[in-house]
Image 1 (cartoon, rainbow, N blue to C red):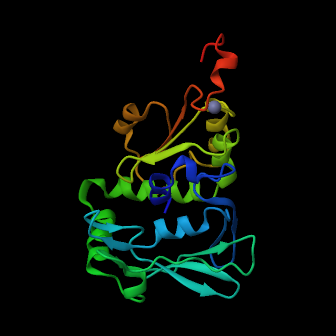
Image 2: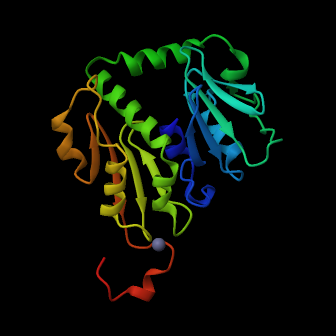
Length: 244
Ligand SMILES: [Zn+2]
C-alpha cells in the first residue's frame, strides 16, 4: 500500500501533510484503522484497488486487496490472509466514488471478489518467494507497514507546504524529499525513536545495502531515505544568505 501511494500521489494531490492520504492511524482489535484525508480519499482508493490497465501494460494497485463495506466503515481486506485495514472518514456517511471498468481497464477487485486473478497470483509469487530478494521484500513490507502506522510522523515532512515528494525504487526503498520545516536529522531521530529502526528476528540484515542508501534510515534489509532539499516553493529568496 505504501509503495502504491508514495508513487501514485503527486505533490499537488497531497494536503495538510497527509503524504500517503491518511491523517491518523489507530490499532484496533481487528487490525488497523486509518483516517482518510477527505480531499484524498477517492484518489487513495483508486490507487490501491488492483486493476489490469492495458495502457499501462498490466497489473496496478495492490494485488489481492479488496474493498468491503463494514458497518460504518469501509474495510480493505486481503483475498489471502486475515489482515484488515478499516478506513475512517471525517464524514460518517461518506460513500467512496469507486473506480469502474473502462476501455482497457478491468477492476480486479470488482471482478474477482473472493479469489485472486492469475496476474495477482503471479505478482505475489514473485514478491514473496522471489529468490534472493525474498528477504528484502519481507523487510520492506515490515518497514512500510510501520510507516503506514505513523502518518503524523511522516507528515512532519509536509508540515510547511502540506506536501512532499514521495516515491519508491521499484516498490523497494521508500524516499521522502521535502524542503522547509523539520530538519532531516530530527525526523530521522523521531522515526528511530518510534521503533522504525528495530528489526524483528525473522528479518535478515543486508549489510551490503547500507552503502547504497547513505541518507536512509535502515531497518534490516529495508530503507526509508529522508532527503531535505532547498525550498522548491519560492520561499528560498528570503533566506538566500543562509547556506543550505
Ligand atoms: Zn519550502
